[in-house]
Each structure stands twice: as C-alpha cells, then as structure tokens.
Length: 148
Image 1 (cartoon, one colour):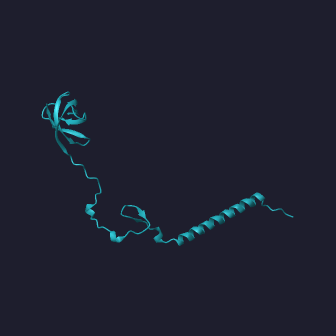
Image 2: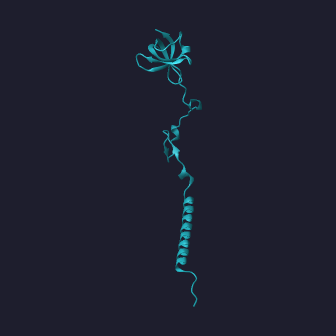
Image 3: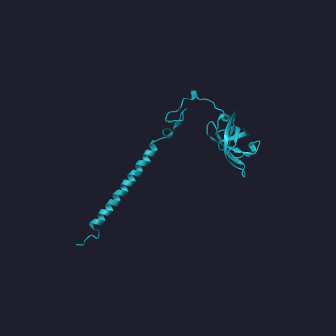
C-alpha cells in the first residue's frame, strides 16, 4: 500500500486557504447585494438655512432670492481713519538717515510711528511734539506733527 504524499500540515494549510477564499467570496457577494438595495435618494443630504446638513428636504415656500452682487467674497479693506484729536508726546527715537522714529504718547504711553515727511520741521530725539494719528499699514501713524 502506497502512502499519501500530502502530509497533515499540508492538508491543513490547503484547507485553511480554501476556507479563507470562500469567506472572501461570500463577503464580496454580500457587498454587491447591499449596493443594489440602496437607492440614490438615500444618499442625498440637504443643507438648511443655518448651514446644517440634514436628511430632510427644506421647505421651498420659505425660499429667499439673493442677488449675487450682494454676496461679499472677501473682507473689505479697512479705510484709513484720521483721529482729529490732537495728542502730545515725546520723540523716543529718531533715525535721521532713514527719516523715521517713534513717539511715546503722553496719555496712553503707546509707541506711534512718525516719518519725517509728516512733520513741518526737523525732528530730533527727546523733542516734545503735537500730532494727530491715523491708521497706517502696521499700526498707528503720526500725522501733522508740530513741535510744542
């Protein structure tokens, strides 16, 4: 009598592979069947007037017409506002080569940028100045600067 060339280990591995292949095929068929059961209406989501996603269709009688021109896409640039109140302060530092410096406001102790072109006379560190402020590119900027 001849012996089988397949050992117990080989039979076990082959049967495990076969079982795994059958399970995979079964799962594939289940997914295929589930895909056919669902319809497109089940997949639709609606957005209500508050921007929340819902599964119910909104009431079309409450619909409002909005003109495209009225929709703001970007943030509008802030306009430069001039503060008409005259302030006083001391010129903390001034670079004569570059033509700019900083004034320390006597009331608020804020540091305010000043440029030589905004002043009527020569500027030197330590001077007392009267000025008005406006919003510059990086913060407050002194304009109409006059020595006290």
